Length: 477
Figure 1: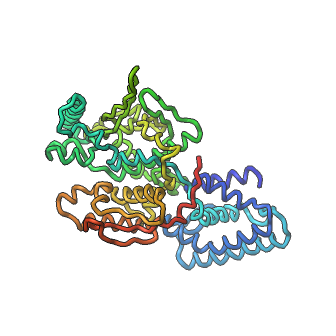
Figure 2: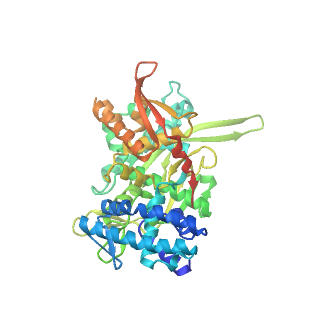
Figure 3: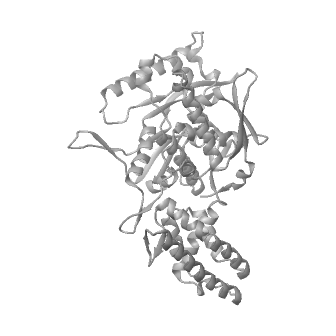
């Protein structure tokens, strides 16, 4: 295959949202050296042609390509085109197979080769799932399980110097958030602190409402996208770690972020593929919401003296994500603040994004955000469903068998459904858990489940994991 045609195929597939590993597999399939094996493979691909057109019809409302232009077509036109295209492909394929030549490109036009490449990409899509590493410690932070008893001296009965220090730190932060949110522009995002349940349960409800907000779908997707960007930066050695501050400096283009966030380019009237403007705004919103959220994080430091070595456990209150170079302008008509983000982004991240990525990690599909949306019918998703699925991935890869048991009461805080529990809305909680299970089954990680009772008589879920799913382990840059 000449370099010009290879580039054309790659650009064609990249424009349609296929990732690098998949595109490389398509090129490999098209340049298979064994002519007979390649012909047999492509014969199977022709059988996928109808499925391919159905995918285009469902996902893009664009079902036929004529003279390089997509047009809407009736079922009759699709059927005629399918029949004609199949015959053309089979004719070329038979000539190719009879000759034994590996020069496939002598028997098909460039347009047919592009069509083949698109069909092959769809065919291979299910068998190649690029993955990224996700640290268990980071998962604990947004599942709000990051603090243990030794880091919660703030609630101890004993009045120790450490308790006084941490209580003062916490109260100072709450006062800062109250003042900031009362003075903010009504159109801007409120600052918030992400509180583990024990803190929420010990705080007056009126204060809690002013300093906290629900974890949004945008934020969950943004965290996954940032984890993907960190994985790539580690692979390409384009990441900076500031050890004394335990901070990560990360630079990237918004286009990379949009892909990992789950956005898909669509063809517009001018023939170019672009991300939807509203979808871009939601993706940016996720970054801004994280930028305005602080977390209570555990901090351990070792103090070495002549006589002993002592580990001190304490808490810090800090951001996970801090955007650099934010530009704020005021809209003339409304007077509202508008935040402008550059296409070239620079973030500082808490060091938790790097921890555990060598040993204590689990793997997630790189494009999990898109898989979840596709599994649930293309609609916007409750963050509870997203959190359920990530939780299942985290536990499935640590389990010794294909069975995982989780209590109903345990899933409530993981899925951030406490407000429904407080208000007695068990129906909503069970609905969200059911939706999470449905999503996991459609993605393929879960085979089935059953309900049971734990030793205290409470409801538990028994999940039967599809271990074959984890054969995908293909990490890519």
